[in-house]
Image (cartoon, rainbow, N blue to C red; front, top):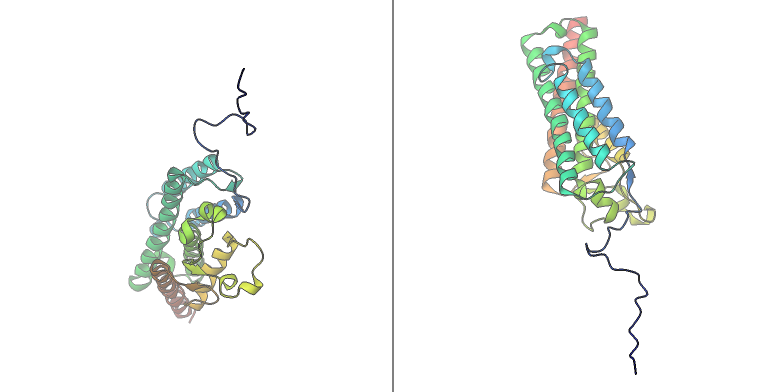
Length: 235
C-alpha cells in the first residue's frame, strides 16, 4: 500500500529566499533627476571664483552619481540597497557642499570686493544662481534624509516622521496611502529660504532642525548681502 505525498500547491520554492515585493507607492525618478540637472546647470553658470574646483569637475561628479542612480533604480525609486543609498547620500552631499562653498565665496566677495560685485546685473545674476542652487541642494537633502529616503518611504511610512507635513498634522485631509514627494521637499526648501523659518512643515528630528537652521542662515546671508550691495551699486 503506497502513501500519497502531499502536493505543493504554491509552486517551487525559491532557494534564495522570498522575492522582494514591489513598492506600489514608489515615486517617479524624473522630478529628483530634473532638480539635479538644474543644479548642475546653475553650477556651470556661476563665475569661476564662486565655483568649487574647475568648471567641469563638479558637474562631472554629479552627473556620474546621477547616472549611477538612474541605472541602478530607473523609472521609480524603490530599491532599498545600501549601495544605492550611499550613492544618493553622496550626490546630495556634493550638491550641498557646492552650494555652501559658493555662498561663502560670494559673501567674501561682497565684503572684500570681487569682480561680480561691481556690477548690479552681474551681482544679481551670481546671487540668484547661488540662492537657487541652495534651494535645490537643500530640497534634495530633505528628500534623501527624511524617513530613510524615497525608497524606504515607498515601502513604509514611519509613525513619527522627521519632517511633519500638513497631512501628518491633519490626518483628515490626508489621501489614502499618501507619501511626501519631491515637490513637497522643494516647496519646503523654497519657503524656508524665503521666510527664514518653518511655514507649514515642522521639523521634528534634531537633524531636521539643524539643516533648516543652516539653510535659513545661508539664505539670509545671500539675500541680505546681495540686495544691500546691489542697492549700493545702483545708488
